[in-house]
Length: 464
Image 1 (tube, helix red, strand yellow):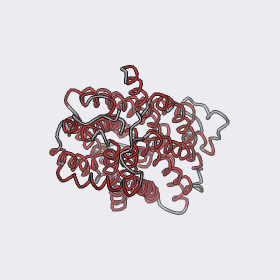
Image 2 (image 1 turned 30 degrees about the vertical axis):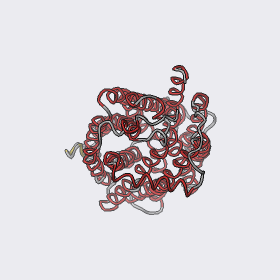
Image 3 (image 1 turned 90 degrees about the horizontal axis):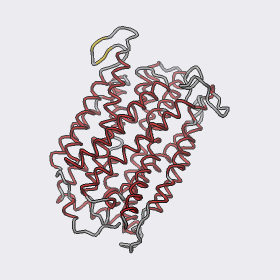
Image 4 (image 1 turned 45 degrees about the horizontal axis):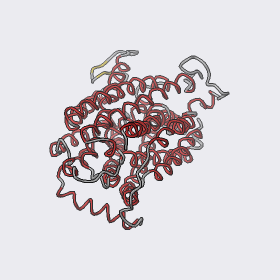
């Protein structure tokens, strides 16, 4: 493979992050998630629930949905990864799950303000999330083949930086042109274009089709430039055989202390991070009563910080390795979460503030920047660490186990939020138990080798 071809392949691979980030930025966190929570809360209130109870019920349904989707992904990802490794083909799976992603995101349009299509929309969201997570599994498996171990951190960080840039641009477009506030106008002060009806919240609901179209357009470089070399299959393409491969890898874990500690630790801190991303906008809507536009601005601040921090983090990763980068980032995330849990309209960090104070809003903007920056860095560095533990001959199997570890307890953070919210009756204090996941993840990092197991596989043939 020539240097030019490899560079183009790396750039094409990075475009996947650019194409998919709007799902997490727009659909999961800053536009669709808060909009859905607000619609559900209003519907519950209309049925006679009090405001606090309606908010808690909306948050519980949203978190429960993500819990079950995460369980399904956790069960399927390792075996699906092993199947791809056996075939030595990942691109067909990326194509298939890309179609699922596009159909699911487009279906989010159906979330009408009267909540009458909630069931259908939650199914569409499930399809979109499965598509996003499974395509990520297969594209992550290509990472070890994009450069030597010392360069993987820079490539991973740059990919995340580009992804967050895509999220920022997409969010700007949604806020400026489509997402309407209570007055029916966008951030530019105009109604949504193309005859979209503000009364029916069609501008905000357009986030689904917009995200689908964004993916279709910006995945073109990926499919044009990323090629897999032809290689003989490693075994018969049977579910039984793939399951056997996964079990063989699992049986190796007791003798691979670094990999085991990393999988368990990242399982906990990534689960907590996903909860922060998924419920940050919901928190702003339910606790501080922010509008969609305010939440969008919050998202822009967080995404810009994440993009810059991911790029810088990739360079720090190349210089110092991923372990210290992960450790510092998780510490920052823990502090930000605790700060948010003790802030609402009446207080900041537990200190009372007067009515109408802007201090709670300012605190959340600052913590959003911290969460965005540290979160982007920890994801990129964790992807690097997994690549340093993966056998180059079977990277998808290893990243399937990584996906399993990330989803095996995907129910845990939403469940902790659900339990905390139900027990306290507060959407704010419901987040507090998630801090324990960050702390437990930090403790497990002590057993992770700074360079992973890259030297173990140094003599292994690269699949690309």
